[in-house]
Length: 96
Image (cartoon, rainbow, N blue to C red; front, side, top):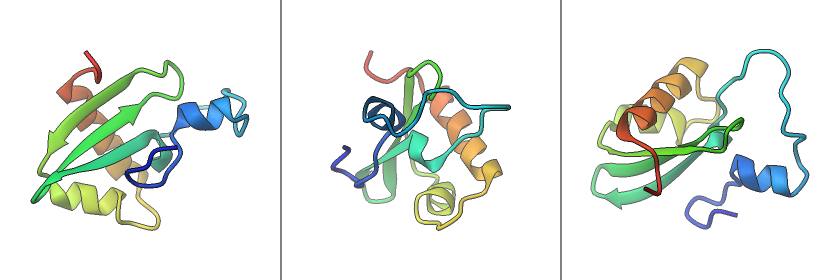
């Protein structure tokens, strides 16, 4: 379990048996696929983990309107989640 924001990532849910690892139809981005780490005033490290390949991408961003629209929202829109995913993939693979 991620201690930074008390959410369980997709890998943890898969290993705990909370998901089968298979999704039907088109893959949809979920808020649970993201991890947010505070990096200083107005900056967050956002990590996206692919539910299919388990690869992780990250970026440190100061785009607070986008972070607020996803992390601090009860129901983030799919459009905002896709924008955040694209931003993470632009940053590069996490852990290398």
